[in-house]
Length: 213
Image (cartoon, rainbow, N blue to C red; front, side, top):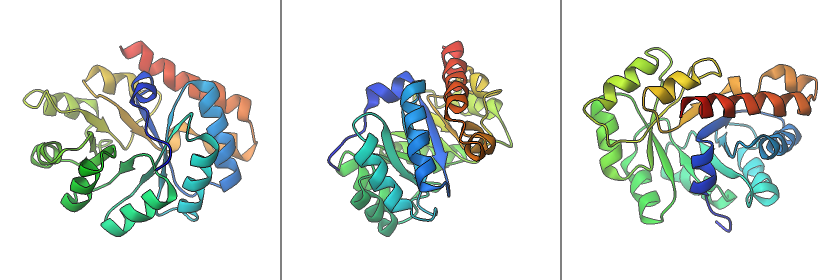
């Protein structure tokens, strides 16, 4: 990796925005909107068409400004594909010890997917940078608060069902970050190529976080 993950930028706007199967040119425009809005972290899922090409292109164009990472990393094969493309951080939907151990050894930020208290604790003990609580939508912010009652030292990133409307509630419940999917870039902005409107929309996500702290 020639360009590294910026925790400073991430901590100012701890929102991981998840992109799956977006048009490659649209992704570049979205990245520009991220830069202008104050958001900093984009996750490209590996099960997207052209995922590695998109990661490589985004890192080349925006890797010194934004955090560009790979999601849906489920194996060592996936991990090496992501890293070879230049991914600056890794996100998984599941707990894979080998993937975690490699990232910890190489000092690569890794957000590990887990759901139960036992899975969450195991991921954290193995060295996860944060634990991605997935799927979080069904149980909502209350589940994050309940998990953190006995496990208050663990950094949680609820993912799934997070929106502009409930983002503040997740942070108030104790989340250290959130993962947001389609809500962060509604299709209407992409269809209309409304990049100015999208930038304004992204700024509202950042404001929702700022209102919570």
